[in-house]
Length: 162
Image (cartoon, rainbow, N blue to C red; front, side, top):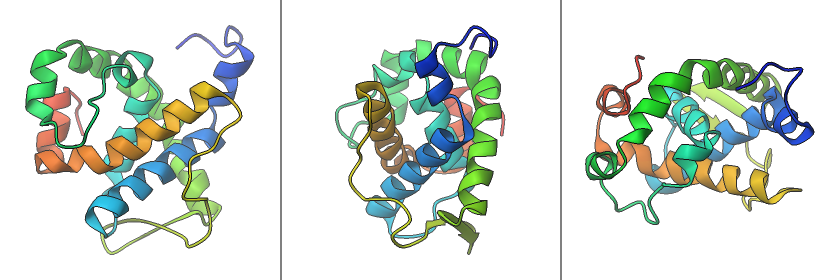
């Protein structure tokens, strides 16, 4: 990610706490749709971090039935991108998560994040195509990432240190 002075108008719109809050919320929505319970904090953050990276977003599987290990074998660039970019992108996502919690869009309890009823529409909508695609990716990742197993396994496979 370039310095804030070099970011385009659309990039500034994507790399801000409000949009990161939306992405974390979309990941929690995806998780809840698949697992009906509180979403583990690392899943919401990891899903948002991955959704913001075009190199990862463009190779996401078409279905949540795809295994993470097989997908990573076919896309060995993903752990490289995560290792290179995760901490920088997470520095945008963490304030977004805090924004969502302070704004009462998300709540933390019972070991995870839950969506406050009516805080964000269930249907993804956006002003730009890129924003729409990123939100859809966050929903998909919230549903898909936990299917592999433990959070530590997921983060290890992605090459990210918890």
